[in-house]
Image (cartoon, rainbow, N blue to C red; front, side):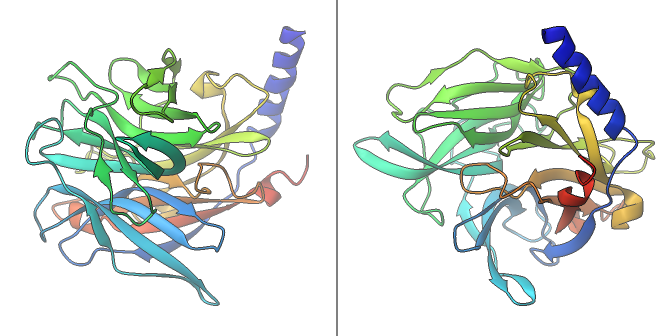
Length: 336
């Protein structure tokens, strides 16, 4: 039976192989001249308000990552973004002294030092200016807008090697009242996921790590009622101009929830992508997916990817603004 189901799945892959949709791309917001925005985690609440957590620098033209929140208000003409608010700094000492970045925020109730918190944030920190030895920490808040406090036993997912990139670029999905599933890039094993039992931070437990083979780093998944969607940063026929360390394509693919989540990345079904031809920029990177507060798709009719495009050449970093790409899933799945 397992073999038959796999063959049916592969026939579906072949049927969709030549079918893709082109997204509608729009500018969203910027920190202004001398500032950069990237690595978005964007969630929408029950009132339609969007909260975009991003990496941004504090001082113009100075490269140190902080975490900022941009709040988007729905209007008849689309979303209007309020100015960004700084919500987390690097620590004065310790594992995240240099940069804090790659925030991912979820509504998840947890207990800590006798208090109950309603929101958690996983984030990347590093204590090396060479961008190695990245690790994943946890922060907590009673309100989505803050204030945020750091967990006193960070990092929650560590890396012992100081000569490799480490772990980071985390994204989480709330499975139930006690458990989140956290996905992250891992230089020791590839794209990784594991379940964390985090409702009581005095008794954290983890499941064993699992990997999605042939899935490149810097991915962002989201579950719907029938599929798991993944946006991924890719390098396709890319030139050698700087920045060479980010990709030129932000791809969207999916896998039916009936399939094993660890299915080889090459077998996920492509829906479409943001390309240099579509965005007008030679780099398109660090994609995320608009979700509800627990990490789930709002529906299966459309998917909104948030990503950062960039120029090439000496001003590459100062072109890091936030854009969106809307994929018409209803159109894509119309022939089912």
